[in-house]
Image 1 (spheres, rainbow, N blue to C red):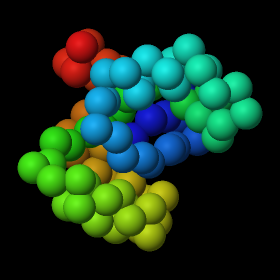
Image 2 (image 1 turned 90 degrees about the vertical axis):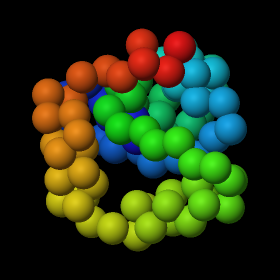
Image 3 (image 1 turned 90 degrees about the horizontal axis):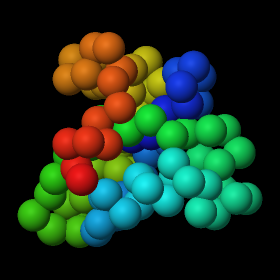
Length: 89
């Protein structure tokens, strides 16, 4: 999950190359994207999966949840909302 620095916008996505995808978000590689528009440049939560099918299922589950549920998940594992990009590079 990516967040804007002010924690207002959240983005949930799935990728097979997390370090590269986060780099793209941070550098606004796709300038018309949601993450570029809302400045979602802070990696606040991630999980690894053994299969893309499992990853997509979790993405759908998270996207179907409320903002409160997403915040609770982030706060449980990353209460300071630190940028976790260094962990994946």
